[in-house]
Image (tube, rainbow, N blue to C red; front, side, top):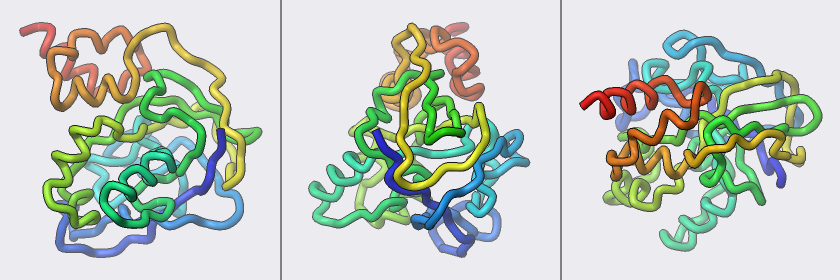
Length: 219
């Protein structure tokens, strides 16, 4: 299992986002060398775990529980074949493009060591939005991406450090429950009947997903 690239964005303004000032960081590109990864701080204040990266809308992105976004090269290739396009690493706005790692089958609370220093923890799936749809310029993209239920994973930083393309990724902790990234995505989108099962993921569960699950259970 390998980290193919670390991808970051410079701020730019687009017409297809609701972010303040129309600024987005979804257009991420691979960087050379090794980058420093650190805990960014709470949502609304902290951005990306990579200082050189841009988060355009701190209301909905970034912060401790969405410090990094990982997407599998295999899924980029699958979409590329289906859409007749070539997607470079970072095309889906991911910070980490991986190979050989089952990102969508990862359990919430699963921990990965990247290289010799960095440890991250899986927290939640990416939910597609208007900015993502505008970036891809594919008709009905949000619906298509949702139905695939292979959203990639947001990560929190457990052990900061440096990482770079070519680093080995190893799973160093795998919890004993059923809530994978794909399962959580389905619960939050197309299959809300799964919501009462989410608290099994424990404290690793993204706080927003936990609140939604608890509201559903209360009803």
